[in-house]
Amino acid sequence: MGSFGTTEILIVLVIVVLIFGVGKIADVGPALGKAISGFRSAVKEDEKEEKKEEEEEETKPEEEEKA
Image 1 (spheres, one colour):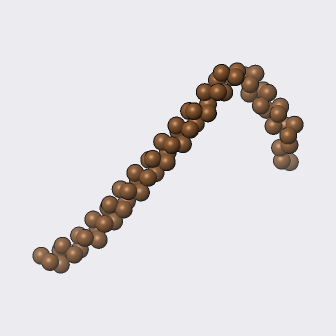
Image 2 (cartoon, rainbow, N blue to C red; image 1 turned 90 degrees about the vertical axis):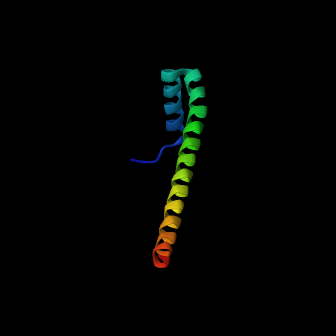
Image 3 (tube, rainbow, N blue to C red; image 1 turned 30 degrees about the vertical axis):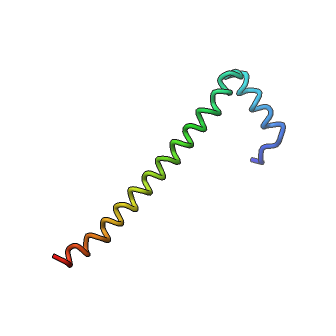
């Protein structure tokens, strides 16, 4: 099984346009962009939560030593 060439990619694109139409394909770009930005924001929120939990764990033993 070889790699895809220009001809094969063009054939696939023509089939996709015939099946979905140009209007549906134009809607895919913005939807994909929203999905990617949503994924990025979720990853950033998760990283913030992990850092917050790590900071809480680091300060917890210090508080126990003082008591």
